[in-house]
Amino acid sequence: MTETPKTALTIAGSDSGGGAGIQADLRTFFACGVHGLTALTAVTVQNSVGVHGFTEIPADVVAAQIETVAGDMGVNAAKTGMLATAEIIATVAATVDAVGIGRGRRVPFVVDPVAASMHGDPLLREEALEAIRTELLPRATVVTPNLDEVRLLTGISVTEETVQREAAEALLAFGPQWVLVKGGHLAGSTRCVDLLSDGTHVVELEGRRYDTPHTHGGGDTLASAVTAHLAKGLGVPDAVSVGKRFIERCVAESYPLGQGVGPVSPFW
Ligand code: PLP
Image (cartoon, rainbow, N blue to C red; front, side):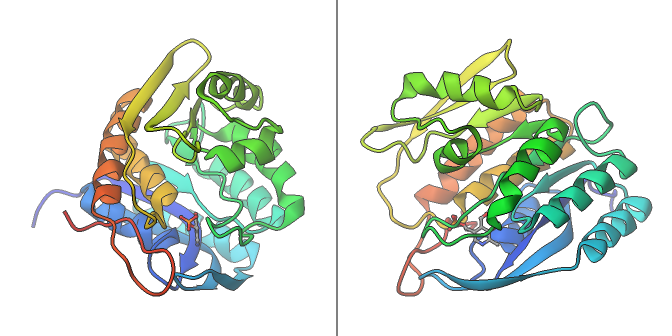
């Protein structure tokens, strides 16, 4: 028998292609040395070419999964991915409050505001965006939007690095403790700069840009790596910095699979 590892909870959807969603989260937790717990929110039907549809899990079942694992095993950090509907978002907000997860509470809470796949297929019902702003962002220890999600949440189109700070300020106004504005999708840039800010401390995290089309699951993998390191007790800037190095390796080793976009790789 060995010591009990730290636990990380993902509240997210399933990707039948195994590249993103709860599948990416679990293997990232494993790779980062924490025990993964799951609260499934939706089942997507997807492959490397796209998301063909999804069915959401009833909100009370999402809540019950969170309560059941939190009450028995304990949660050291949690994250959200695909939440699908406003009803699930409101339920997750109430449930994390009840079990002590979120900003200002014992357990750090990473909110990855997943709205669509990289192919543009929706993963969130349209009316649910406002619920992300009002129910989730104020509860987040750190929120990790990509540039598409920044535009949907704030209306700001980040076309150059200088606008990233403005976007971070606009997101902080919704109430998260920290915001990580990921610059990976910034067209034409040879760098890959992510901006981390809590309004007082602003950190630019520069990374290498890899020339690969195979980046499916990259956002989920980064958010999970950050969550795993928060579970292990790191503060937000350190967890983000370690998480960024982790995702860089995964992108560097990404592989083709199927006819479309292959996944970032856990094999290294
Ligand atoms: N499917 C699920 C269940 C997801 O959670 C996500 C992203 O969070 C995706 C698909 C899309 O991943 P990507 O945009 O990396 O293709």
